[in-house]
Amino acid sequence: MSHRVPSAKEQESARLFLRRRWRRSNKHKILSQTHDFGMDLSENSKQSVQIPCNNDLGLHKQAPNANEYKDLSISPAHTPNAPDNGSSLDIYTAHFGLKERPFSLLPDPDFLFWSQAHLQAYTMLEYGILTRAPITLITGEVGAGKTTLLHQLLKSVGSDVKIGLISNAHGDRGELLRWVLMSLDQPAPADATYVDLFATFQKHLIDEYARGHRVILIFDEAQNLSAESLEELRMFTNINSNKDELLQLVLVGQPELQEIIRRPDMRQFAQRVASSFHLRAMDVKTVRKYVGHRLEVAGAERNFFSPAATDLIYELTGGVPRLVNQLCDLALVYAFTRGRKGVVRHTVELVLADGAFFAASLPSEEGGLAS
Image 1 (cartoon, rainbow, N blue to C red):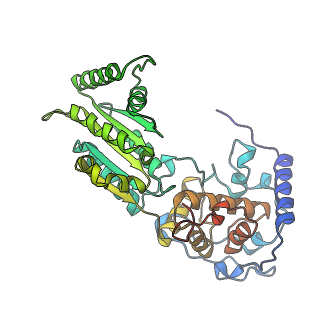
Image 2 (spheres, rainbow, N blue to C red; image 1 turned 90 degrees about the horizontal axis):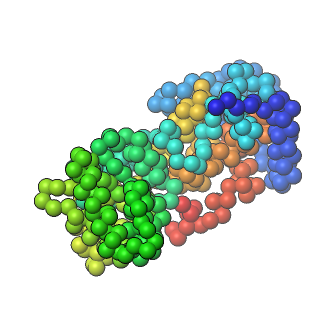
Image 3 (tube, rainbow, N blue to C red; image 1 turned 135 degrees about the vertical axis):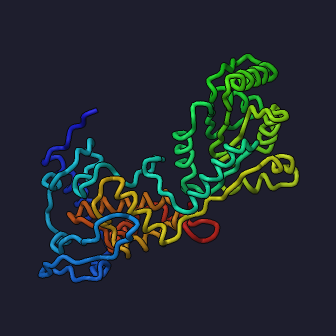
């Protein structure tokens, strides 16, 4: 699909509009943190200098010329080799020389960063599927990247695996079975009894097994399932007999899912969990690599987030990928409206001072950010 590149007038109007909004809302005068890059970015500084950059990112280490950080009126339409960004909503992509927004909040396997924790979580997912584990359990905080891992799994399974993906299932056991049948493209008439629905489900599993296929049900946001629904899922696995594995379950959810399964009355369910992993937030070193990775995938030739800016982003987000994406995206908007080609600590401070990063005002139970 071809897209229209916004005209120079449209881009300049958008930039000036955002800049005026920033000026009206900025009531705090914070001195520019030019020492973020460990260099003098004054008006008279002309030299190009080197900044720290993680070699794992494969990005250029050269910092932009100092004049790029002056508060100049820069028209993104004249950015060299500006990409076809396709939407005026992504107008800053041309300004930074990007093919697309690097920090979208939508799960996208193409941007998946294989941190050690994500690699281990995905390995446990694969292990559960390959060993035909009755139940595989993956938990993690909100925004930790669980759904992105699921999308990656959906891309990688073979044609012999039939997957039903159920998100936010709720209701009694009859409604749960309807969710399951719909995920497998099977009929679930409104007037059908539970016995009728279960017979349809069992017949479908047997038919797929006869064709040499395996059926895997994946429940995303499984922490919303009641204890009764979880017990119903355990009963589903009773369809398996001897060496005939007709059905596998994968449950993905927030940490409270583990708390439910560890209850004494859920002991029978817990004993069938053959593979599990808890996905934790990223540490500061991983966040630095994560930011550089997403910029590179989006087409950046260098990591234009200074180390000090990235460290502050980690402090404000606790290393939760979704919050990192949100704050990085806002920082790019702020840098764009000021005509700058990089994000320094001062840029992130402005986002915070203006209240643009809403998550910063949501304390969690532990006293940190809500995640």
